Structures are given as C-alpha cells and as structure tokens.
Length: 318
Image 1 (cartoon, rainbow, N blue to C red):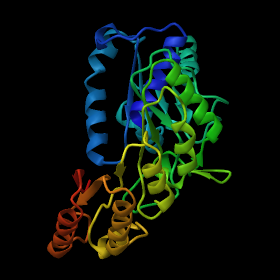
Image 2: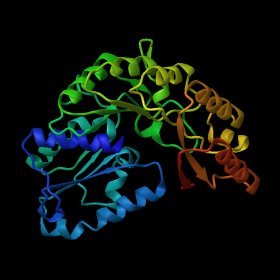
Image 3: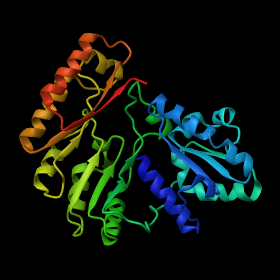
Image 4: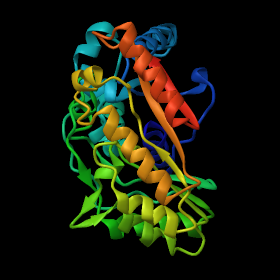
C-alpha cells in the first residue's frame, strides 16, 4: 500500500514539472512516506528526519515532509519532535500533496493536512508503468484488531467502484503492465454494490494484455469460497493466498480481536486446498503478544508446521 501511495504521489509531482533526484543534497523537497504499524518503524523515521537538520540549516528553503500513516497518527505533535518539518500529510490527503507544497513555497508556512479528504474523481494516469502494477481496490479497515492502527489512520472500509478499477487495469495493460496486484487492507471484504472480490477478479481476467492477477491481504474471517472457485476457474488468477493467521492460540486470537479461531483457520485452509489443490498460502505472525505464554507460542509453531506455509512474515510485538 505504501509503495502504491509513493508511486501515485511521484506521478503528481512529475505531471506538474518536478523531477526526481536520488540525492538528498540536490533535492528541493524531501518526503518520508511512512508506516505506523510498528513502533520500530516510527523510531527509524524520526531518526532519519533528524539527520536532515544540517541540510535544512544550510538551505532553509528546503521542504521536508512527513506523509502517510505516521503523519495521520502523530498530526501536529510531530512538530514538537521535528520542529523544522514543513508539511504533515495523512494518507487520505496525499492526492493534494503538490498543491499543499505549492502553498508552502509561496507563503513559507507550515501545513498540516490530516483526517478525511475528498479524493479525486478518478485515479491519476500513470506515466511510468512496470510489468507488475498495484491497483487500489479498497482503503481502510473495519476490523479494529487490538494491535493495529490502520482503522485510525486510514479510516473505515471503502471499496472503489468495480468499473473504475477495471478501467484502470485496462489503462495499465495498454501501457505494458502484465500483472495486476489488487490492494486492500482487508481485500476479502471488497464490496461494490454487491460485486465482491470474485466478481472483480472475473472482470479483470478478461482484459487481453493482463497475464497474472494477485490480491492482498485476505482476512481469515471474511475470505469466502467464491474466491477459491474464481482462483480455480480463472487461469490468470495466481493460486496464491496471503492470509495472516497472526497466532495459533485461541486465547491470543481473542485478545487480538481477530474474529476467528485456530479451528476456523484450519478449516478455511482445508477448503482452499480442496478447491484449488495447487494453492500456496502465506501468512503473518506476531510473537510475544501481551499475555502470550510458552504454550501459546507452541500452538503457533504447531499451526505453522500443520499448514506448511509457502512463506511467513514473523514479527516480535512492537
């Protein structure tokens, strides 16, 4: 999601005549697009921002900005830690980032843009297209897992209109994209007036230039059988499911507010493999969640052995 946000912001700047540089010393604008899902990520951003102070002292007209989820979470409090910041812009305001920076350039004032914004009617055209491209299918999340900041910084679930997503996929295909990766914090909850994820996969499947379709991230409580059937029936949909388990212990899953049990997860895996025998499943896990005992940890380890994930992202609680 952050990679897509960065790419779309870059497109805004390029379309207004800006040029990208690889050197901080040559830059007139330096933006940090941030994640706030772990404390360690926030600490790294603040450390990297502080390292820019000598550049700012040397060139007071240099614009330095904090954007993304961390900006939404911290808001103007970030100015207390980094007083030389010029702009703080949350993820729901990033579509107006260039206009905000134009305001700073003219008035030399600080700008804080957080909260809900009015998104553009259409996604911006892409001037540079890769073989594999992300498309935003939905934003936000309604689940409020006890460890997660996403509903507070990206807002509640909103699905983009299916025809708009298909149109964007066609545009990317015409410019050379061969693989489409649909993004949503809880992609399995996609719903546009009754059109669910399986319908969206079906619509994109018939775009001639597209060869592969993927989607992330699937929440176990909402992943439905129709998605597995679409995966089996549509050759372009890769038989790959990123479905975070987070823990193998029912006690910890309840503390995490994950809305499913270990048994639920295993039944879903069994159903997926029955419908799509070649499917590969990836997962995420948090180790050391508050209250986790050695026995809880061992239940997670046994779940990993039982499911045989193709890969897992494992993090210590932060």
